[in-house]
Image 1 (cartoon, one colour):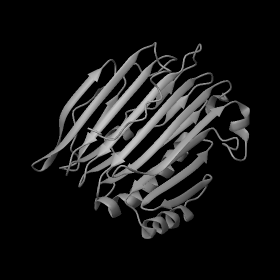
Image 2 (cartoon, rainbow, N blue to C red; image 1 turned 60 degrees about the horizontal axis):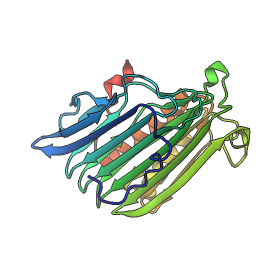
Image 3 (tube, rainbow, N blue to C red; image 1 turned 90 degrees about the horizontal axis):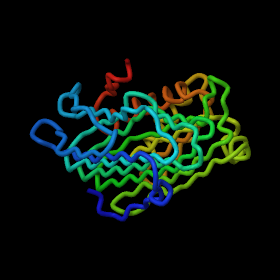
Length: 285
């Protein structure tokens, strides 16, 4: 598993509530990637891998309760061994409900060994008005590992005209290559000021980030060219930090933003993995 120290800001915040954890380890075995081990506690599970592309494993992470309340905590750890190929998604959006006072915790740790690849493509997380969430994501890639992943968060329920007031979101994202930090950032959203500020969310309830590694100027220009030809594009920026491609976007609708992220994934996947973009079957249900 990950050998570098892991920042765990959720420990102090989630002393009570329903805890669930899932630890998955993948390995290359002959012509396929196999689920080497799966350890879980509480209501966080995984289905058996599917193989619509032959060797690459498609995996769906399940949270049967369907929602998280204050004091609950979800911990998910994925270790992709050398030479393994994994695409991981979720069957539906994550829902974080109004809290009576306690914070919910969400911690994600992804480790991709040399020669391996991981595509982390979950559905969006929806934070209801009054939700309190502390989230931490750490991604560690080694040597020539390939990573493509996104995170989409909807603050409130815009379709129901529900704003994220009150509510708090505290998040931390760390991306490391060979233990050297490439991107470390924190965010806190609490109240109208951050929701509406020009240096905040600018009144848009949906935010998303996509990371891809290893990328070059050619990948950057390819993504920018693709976005330039997209109609009704939300506010979006694309940056290359060394070899880490970072896409950030704001939107009024989670579905529209997800389609933009999918289009970027479809552009990058053949170039980074030499594979056509095969959408997980669960997205069509």
